[in-house]
Image (cartoon, rainbow, N blue to C red; front, side, top):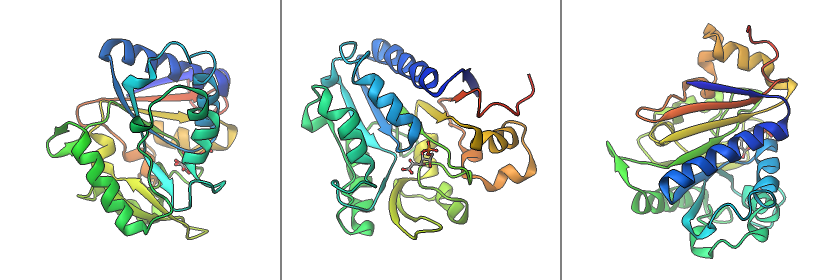
Length: 238
Ligand code: 6PG
C-alpha cells in the first residue's frame, strides 16, 4: 500500500491524473472504473482541460464502480456528473463509455452490467480485471456503494450487486469486493477534513476500522494507492 499526501484537493486530483497518464503511456490502452464524489469532479475538470490532449481517448474505456439507480438526466447520476465535467468536453467514442443504466430495474441492471464487464475484460482467477479502479471513501467508511451495513458485498461472488443507501434507501449498482480487489491499480481519492478520523483509523489498523468497507480493499495481485490531501491526512503521524 502506498499513500501519496498532497496539499490540496486539486493537487490530489493532479497526482492521480499523472498516475493515469503514466499507466496509459505504459499500456497503450486503459480500462478505468470511475466513481462519483467531490474529488473525481475536480479530476474530471482537470482531465477535460490540462490533460485533454495528452490522451488518445479512443484508447480509454470508462466504466463505473458504482452508480445510483436514477435516470442519466438526474442530478444524482454519477454518469451525468461525468458527462458534464468530462465526456462532453473530450473526443471519446460512444462505444468506450460503458455506463450503468440507472433507469432500469436495479436487480436486472446489476446482472446485465456484471455480464458486460465479464465479457469485455480479461479475467484472473475468475474475476474481471480493470486496469484502474477509482474509489472514494464516505464519512462512514463506505467505498464504491459498499456501505458498512452491507459489508457482505465485499465477499459477493457476483461482479455487481444492488446496494441500498443507509439513510435514503436509494438503490445503487456497485462493483463487489472481489472485482475491486482484482484490479491492477486501485486508487482511493480522498480529500477533506471530515475524512481525517477514518483515515487515521484505517492507516493505523484500529479495531473499529474493520467495520469500514474501505479498510478491506486490498488488491490480490495489483497495487493500492491512496491519494489524499493534507486535510484528510491531518491526524496521521509523520
Ligand atoms: C458515490 C461514490 C461514493 C463516493 C464517496 C465519497 O457515487 O457516492 O462513488 O463511494 O466516492 O461517498 O464521496 P466524496 O468524495 O464526495 O466525499
